[in-house]
Image 1 (cartoon, rainbow over the protein chains, first blue to last red):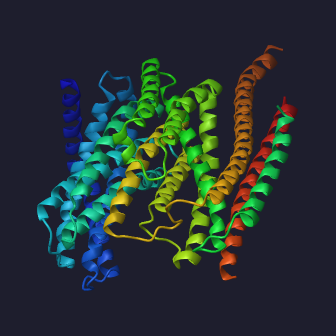
Image 2: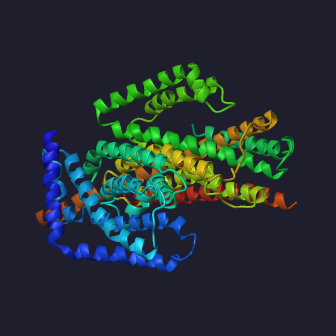
Length: 225
Length: 299
Length: 43
């Protein structure tokens, strides 16, 4: 058990270091996230009374697009340098690589979300009418849901002809229950009209189920390339 | 075997015609909906057929995933047996019986549950090795066809009855839509993946899809309890004469689905045969290409 | 009367979809049989 965590953390640290050095990709993704928010602001009138009810959806759709852009380059570096072949023959557990990628993506998408959220708050004059602290488990569990499946499907898409479009094609249908929970939960908290308790439990269940499934099947996927 | 297909085709055609007659003429008109409710005799059997086909795909995918790994295979076998045994015993427990929806008899649930291990072992026996994957792609594709019909006839039914094409909270239609999306993405993956192990990837995706379906159901169910929506397709119990016609229609469509699957299965086998032949030829060709100049020089 | 229009639309749509799919199967069968014939001739 200790070896899996050591490899995971080492891989994660390496990824973060490399990402930090090549800030181009980072910057363009940040700018893309900002653009998504701006497009939404112009498309969905922030002054309209119904805004408060749909902002939950807008925020998570924005996060979803930003996540897809980030996820698409998950394995790009490994592909360029044939690192995956090295992993296949090494004794390091495949799951360590997977976990490192998921954690890296989680941090990265989290940063994007942290930057997009204040923009939404400002442009839509958001005030939380329900219990605001509940937004934290929703944000964490929701992001994990997108990132764990996204990393897995990114690996599956590696040898497909249209790699970039294949990831959202696979990810979106499977993510629907999580998206329903994220959006409905966020809306419930923002409007204060309902309890988000069920949605948090649903997201937790979703995360447990798909993290287990991904860990169980990642080795099969890795050797499939 | 070859003569069986035309015979079955004729039988199926007769069954379908008979089912149509029953649906349009014999079945009584509905008290609330009039004649338009008869869409149900195409809509519901298509749904049941699609779900059955996707279920077979799920079983075939699991078996394909564990086929190379004896430990996993044996574990899966025992889990499936356990599901069957526990499921059947559970239907006898009063606490569980209370949780069943009204009108659902425990014996019906027990029969359905016992079908899970039954399907698992039958499929494992009759579709060895690579045929599991052929079965998987067959049932996925034909399942999508039937699922498309469900999603087309559903709104056509809803419009005259409820005045709307679609209700976002309608749990059955929305779950079916997600199931359709998952399996279309499955077929897209199969088409665009050119890895040697496309089949494994697709099997993994099928498992993910199957895990997703109950979660979809619950998420929409809870959303709907907070935001009540009209239920397309109605609920509640059914006139026994209508139920009778529904079952006749389902039997006819099952026979039809079987024939379509058989055709698709044979098509896939032929496809793989041709691919292998091409591979052999290019292999022979490359060998010949190397040896010809040598023999010429030797002369 | 108006409602019957929907009933027939649903039934016709069902068979259109089935026939369309069967058509694709027939087309693929034909193409594969042609390829098989070409391969046999080539040998």
